[in-house]
Amino acid sequence: MSSLALSLKDVKVRFETTTLAFDCAVSAGQIVAVIGPSGSGKSTLFNVIAGFETPEAGEVRILGEDTAGRMPADRPVSFIFQENNLFAHLDVATNIGLGISPSLSLAPSDRQRIDEALGRVGLAGFGKRLPPTLSGGERQRVALARALVRHRPLLLLDEPFAALDPGMRAEMRALLSELHAEEGNTILMITHHPEDVRSLADSVLFLDQGRIVAHDALDRFLARRDLKAVNRFLGNEEDQVRQWRPSTR
Ligand SMILES: Nc1ncnc2c1ncn2[C@@H]1O[C@H](COP(=O)(O)OP(=O)(O)OP(=O)(O)O)[C@@H](O)[C@H]1O
Image (tube, rainbow, N blue to C red):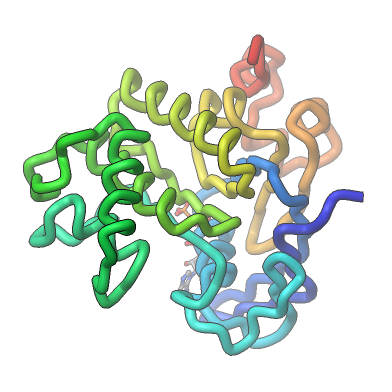
């Protein structure tokens, strides 16, 4: 049996008007697409895993360790959002350096790691640039470089390519796929885009009304017809479902 990167057991989050409940187990090394209708709880799930939201009950384990009481910075997790991942007034190298040391006490070897990470994401020589002078795709590459130098085993991506044009989205997917092959990390990715799912995901976590109602290998998930919420989300027609299905990988 493969080891677990993540497990949530009887986790409950209560907001004023709604309660969310999460149970799941994710094997190490997987890329998991997190999908579901708006308001189904995808961001809340990520906030619980990253430690930005404290559940009122239940257990969140990352690599087998209970995360109770552990601050976000102390969790073995990196997070990339749709936008605003970078400090606008700090240059690119410094933004990446924060991934190594939040107090920016960087040794010469760390500077070398930053340069290597920049090269790895196709941004060699960009270290002195300020984020507002970069394109959206370049900024997301910097965010990926910062995640790279952190070497955290769990990477959470919340619509990381949403603001990019289709060409850049495809480039970022390819880059993410390469980095995943090198790092062997576990990736959870919230996305609304079928092409993200079909080109990257091993499995799908599907949320509806604050619950994880399905967690299946991608092919199995797309073959499901037993859940109304999934049918509603994917559409009933075969050509609607087909856009989520990998053709060649
Ligand atoms: N801080 C909060 N206070 C009160 N309710 C909240 C809070 N955060 C989320 N919720 C509620 O919890 C539910 C799940 O929200 P969440 O943002 O996790 O959904 P989502 O699936 O990420 O949605 P979207 O795809 O639209 O971003 C929603 O009903 C939302 O209104």
